[in-house]
Image: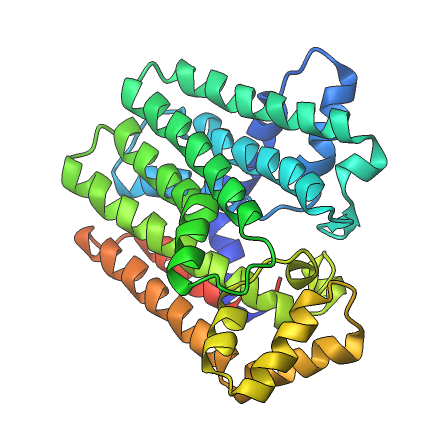
Length: 326
């Protein structure tokens, strides 16, 4: 564990424990099977980053109520629902180092449990009795679904541009981070300027987080990552390092890249050849620098708020998004 992660965990441990309890307390399905399947994804070692962002953002806005942790579970339920659906769509085998839900149970049970979690998130949002919060949660659900469909429609597309990639990850990841931060401002009845600042922070953090996550597909080990290294490429998903390399490569190297990408059953040696070409064209460095730029913009957005422990923790989370290894 890095020094940054140790320091961050020491700051947020009480909040994480409260969020964990709220995730259990608010699940409440009528069927034990639903609890088992939901628990398989919910309680398998997730970082709880999205609900934590809501709690910390509410604190930055001076929220003094008792509902931030309860409402924060909305964002973990939404996240878990998308993972259940995505793993099935992608044909994934591992998630957080465990067999994915649809291989433990079946496709229908996994999909319907994901639907339950989406509905549960919306039901909890209604309890806020705040039209703006409900609208944000509903909008997030729409955007994430469309992001996944957009990505699915471009599987294996060697013409995917950086603009296309950023549109996909905005919908898939950034809107959920952004929404968690925005909802906090509404819950705290904060001024519009604070809502905007937190939305900007969440957006740029989400973009940085996803770029860093995509980089791990080429730099991490399976045991640390909790899913198969190279899985994105095997699923036909072109992410920023590959998009950059395809654009920068000379003709022979581009042909080599294309041949590996088109063969979804590539060997370990072929995968290492591809990683070598990503290094040759500094595509991993380029992607890291892009993520770092969004981290800087996320931290700059927090400059709107007075210095406080909560603001410092949010800044540390932004730094950790780039540093993490899994």
